[in-house]
Image (cartoon, rainbow, N blue to C red; front, side, top):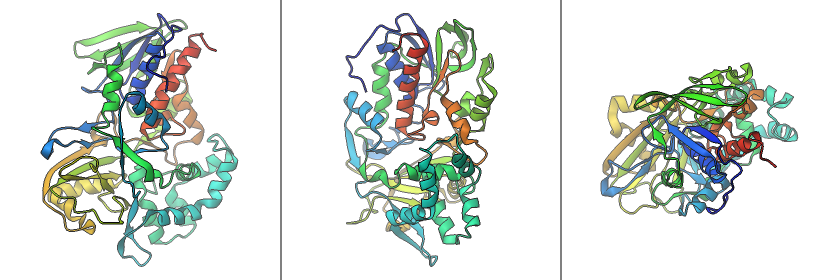
Length: 450
């Protein structure tokens, strides 16, 4: 991350439209302005941050909670460096890492070591991981294609794995936002090959709220984000580009030199392009799926889940999804954050519809006798029209060779967002790094590099 005093003039006079004021778009805009570009930043929502959203109302004692992206792992260098550059402090959380709650081999539900769970999963997949690593994790090759054509569930069925094994794999839907029969085997092998499993032992969140990453980035820009402004169409020639934007005052045409689409593929698919994007790129964008994700935040008058020597975060195959301490860096009442991903999103929705928040509380009695519930907030990301899901995941119908197309520039149009990141797809760092990558590519296309 460059220092706040790093500037150049190599893009002076270059006009750039950045569509999307999440971390990808904000990061791109900052790098572009530092190189002298004239940036117009638009955002369809009535707030900045995208799927980074700190809920600051509705809780007792003035507390706040993360309604979107929450846990920052220590390996996520791009977002850790961004926080440091913005003068934000990271608060260590979940120092005991994650454990797992689900059925044991005998069928009984119990809290178990996540390291052991991942160890067993890793042992099963070790030959596939080794073969994949020999390809240098290349998604455009024979091994990746073979892995990508089958689901995790299909592979387990072929191995005649027991029900308890399938249930352990289902517990990963709080991470991938997809059940074993929806998730590509390649996505799981890639995750394990990266050595990321169980990495949350060095987790943190921004002290005072993760949304400060977005608000401080926006405050550093000359271009104030234009909220409620939706990109509808992009028309480009060899020398120029124009964009049709629907905003609060009606439809307008922007004209300039480049466009960076820092939007989820789920909404990018609704944008018209003239000339049309290459057919393979269109397929990649339209085929990519976003995982259903329901976040439930429960505020209690006492942190009843805390036990000496026990983790404060748990993966699970139950309907409530993954569960973790949602505000251990704040004083006062305690919060539990739940992420019900994949089909668990519908399961917890049904639970709430029948029994309300107390039904969810009862499902957490394995943590201890619940204390008094003070407040509840529910966020269903698949119902958000500007995301249509939590984050991207890869399914067997997605050709691995298409992955590079998600971030490939097309003429004067460039693409950013967590879904375009090879290293940090699904993470805040993927958004940050992809925005900066798109800005760097623009410098090349503008003809002033190296």
